[in-house]
Length: 141
Image (cartoon, rainbow, N blue to C red; front, side, top):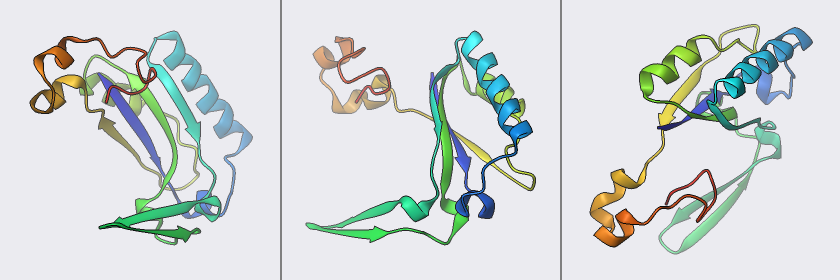
C-alpha cells in the first residue's frame, strides 16, 4: 500500500526558516534508511505559502488567491510517498522520523486510493487492466 506522509507547517516553516544543519542531516540519514528498505517512493520539502496560490472552485467559477496563508494548522510543509505493507508499518517508520523543527511538529499518514477502492466506478475490464506506468508511478486513477 502507498501512503502519503504529510509534514505539517509550523510558524517557523511559514517564515521560511530552514531546519538546522543537524536536523537536516538527521532527516537525510532517515531518508537513506527509507530508500535502503525500499519504502521511499518520492518526497520533497515545500516553500512557504508566501510562494503559493490557492485555486477555489464553486460551480463554474474559479478564484485564485495569492499566499501567504496565515492558518498554519492546515498547511503542508513537505511530503513523502512511502510504499509499505500496511498502516502499522507506516506508523512504525513514522515514529522513527526525526523532527525538523525545534518545537512541536506533526506529520500525517494518508493512504492512497488504490484501484480496488474505485471498483464501483470501473468496469471489470478496467479493473483487470494493469495501471502501472500508464499515468506515472505515483498515480493509479
